[in-house]
Length: 137
Length: 483
Image: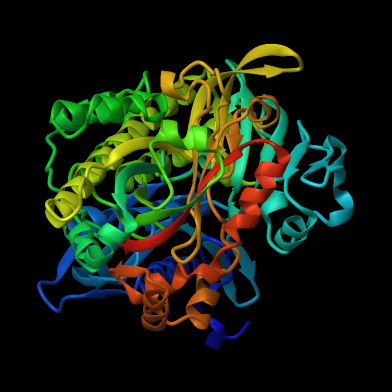
């Protein structure tokens, strides 16, 4: 895998959405997974006001942490109408600290119900890390 | 992956993957399908997911799969798994995030010819009265105490508000509320997501649809249900909205630890589960029931809003604009039920995910008027094809834990559907066929195009031939409202 292949892309799933994400490291994987999730729902943000949030999460492993992080973003989207486009993520074992910055959602065309654990496994590759996430829609 | 050679043929409509297929299976998998439907589905993971479901501790033979099956996440859509009470498990992923997603059908004596000139107006009025789409809020902003009441009372909460009739409740699965719901087992986050969404449709494959009854196959049952050829019906497909999604999310996370605690090994983490008699299992059951009750109330309020739309458009223009309840049922749910297992009655937790309850004639729990005909089974098609009203049979009680199919079942991924179909063109094409579409998103509409689904008629023919439901009437869509 080369640097050019880092990013996210939608892959086929009969009923739901599956997103393949590759990154050089775990914080990058979490950031790209979040960006991919917003891309799937075609979420756009208002220019102002900019908002910041701090997120602290712990889980039993990296995969659970990824589900918890993305679920937190879904919750903020639905409960406060906020989306995020800047992420500073630090991981210490199965604990996450994130400073995230974004804005009120200007438009969102589609809805994700939840982030699933279906066949969820973060894999180490020669170039970094990758994962396929299935979203319930 | 499971292949055709792995099936044992029982009949032209029934196939089995024996327990010997994989060492960790605790029960065989029984599939209701024609050879063609079965072969088509072997290209995705549906059957492997059914085999995985057969590893759940305490699962009772067999795991059942309906002909509208397709790949889900963890558990196949169209799957039914019963687990033994009290020591078998309950699995949130085998019920789904949209807890008590289901369908309600309302009938009428409005003739199609009478209403036809007003269908565009009716589509607009339904769209206006029934909030739909991403991020849409309903007419209520519930306090904690009101939301707790919804969790406990379900559709009865709507009746207290004057938004439901006694017949509405009687003709709803479980009379519109599950006992044993406990709002204390629901997280603050779920409550925050749910307090503004009651009475909303959502998006995705959820819809409100006006149909005309095209053909009646069982006149006696149709008469009891109050549906007749040429008359309008209205169906509502939605669930527990963000409230249910968050409850399932919370408990799938909690159960990741529970499986370690109880030494449960599973082939897919989305199938995480806990014994029904464990603290975790009991808590989830109580929270899941709260979400199910929220969904019953949600569909009841949408039905009330739809009635307002009908009155606004048709009052004074048609002889009668009243919509009466035919039935309301869940197709994503876990229920404690009595079934015969190995010739003996057994209490089991029936997980139905993309499968409807289909109780046969005489089964306790049915309203008196449906005791002879059996429970109405509602099978919506896609927005351009037929929907069906069926009825439960004695065979469904014997062979599928009182369950049947729930719809057409997807066959095309959303990504492929978007590539193949343009929303605007689809809307125009359907209009030429006499179907009025109101949709919040053209991309979303394209994802739900008829070609993304199996042929619902084939699905219905299969369950009918297998004997687990019988045909009552075929419906044709004329107005579709989507979020």
